[in-house]
Length: 82
Image (tube, rainbow, N blue to C red; front, side, top):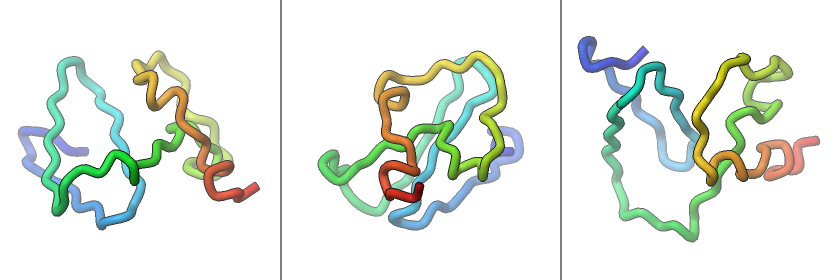
């Protein structure tokens, strides 16, 4: 788990899908990137795509999900995996 207290960080290579789930209210996220943002090249993937959890259901809870993320395409459809 990443936290302010443990000062851990995560490196995500270019081209890898990534996202985050915060466990506390008022969480602050900070990114360091190696290029300017290019909105035309971005894709959003549904957080509860079957492929991500390898058939396991997404954990039941009440989540606050942005409209963009809620309307994102499922990974299976994006890459025609099924």
